Length: 147
Image (cartoon, rainbow, N blue to C red; front, top):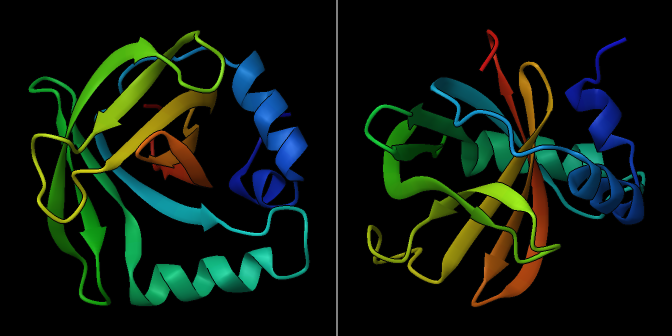
């Protein structure tokens, strides 16, 4: 049975970290993904916080694998903004290959942010957010079709 975003939202931080570490980088995705922020993982607040962030702030990401970049979908109206370079490199979590979403050269508002993602199911990626190398939160990206 394939893993779902709901499964990830129920995991503790240790379980999310173990899954990320055990997963391959996967292919650099292409197309639109719905996103969920994972804050307070493994608690009763995780779903409510994710829904609020999803409605008011961040909805997901739109990848252009051919050109190696993405745009975040933000705000209630789904504005596509905040660009990142997308490439493979070593993870800051475990040193193994991951897909890096690098805002350092493409965004004034997010220049200190680096995301790392790995594919945990055919249409599902688990991500880690870093601010100046300090880990902040996790997130989930779910594509409508196989990434």
